[in-house]
Each structure stands twice: as structure tokens, then as C-alpha cells.
Length: 80
Image 1 (tube, one colour):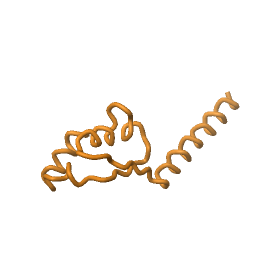
Image 2 (image 1 turned 135 degrees about the vertical axis):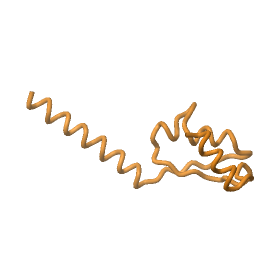
Image 3 (image 1 turned 90 degrees about the vertical axis):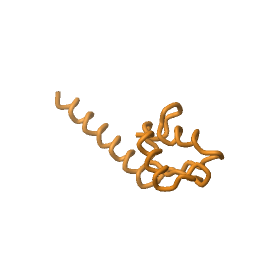
Image 4 (image 1 turned 45 degrees about the vertical axis):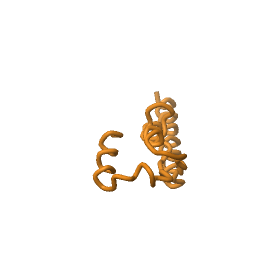
């Protein structure tokens, strides 16, 4: 995913390494993982500090989905 994004940004605007100042994500590990997350890899490519912004709506979606899964699992275990 990272290599594809870099190719796209290079084709779109070759100086993106100098201009990128922030990246918005939903907080998922694929996006913000310490070692190989997309945002982490992008931050290594730019020449300055990148501000990470977590979208509150996406974070709420992740939390609601996790909560719904826990409720569903709880109800299934009660029926078993």
C-alpha cells in the first residue's frame, strides 16, 4: 500500500516530500503501526515532522464496531 501511495504522490506532485504536513487516519494499526503502518512509513519519507490527526468519526466507528462485537459474542456465549 505504501509503495503504491508513494508512486501516486510522486506522479501527482513530485515535491510532496517537502510539503506534507499532516496525515489523517482512523487509528487502525495498518495505518499507524509503529514499524510498518502507512503513516509511519510516510513520516519517514518526508523532510520534517508530520502531524498525525485521528479522525473522531472514524474512531467512533471503530469503537462502536468493537462494542457491538463484544455484545454479540456475550449474547452468543449466554445462549450456548
